[in-house]
Image (tube, rainbow, N blue to C red; front, side, top):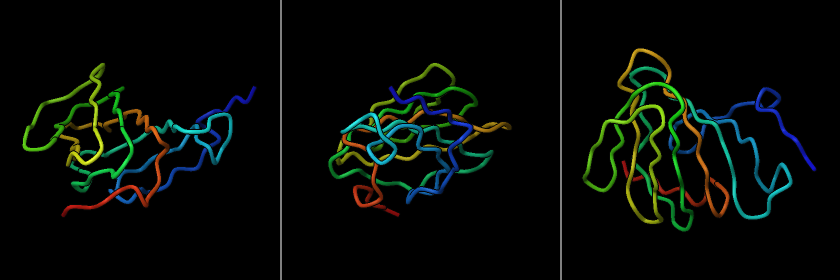
Length: 120
């Protein structure tokens, strides 16, 4: 059994410009095909519109408020909301609040920069 604490993980900036801590992935251990990351967007920040070539991605909002844009649709989001981003579907997320927007990203197969295609 491998237990990983997010406080021991250094954050990095993804290709879409969000700050994440990859908590569990094949590179870290214990899983073979998926990844779990904590992402943060600060007030006024937005990811770059993008797609994933093969990964399915789920965003689960923990704190803050924002707008999720996906393939021409826009919805307000907040704590407790889950959003599925399927392969090939353009999406971006924006923090519209005054506090950080904190969310989990679950990807299958696991996140890679190479799977992310920027559209802007």
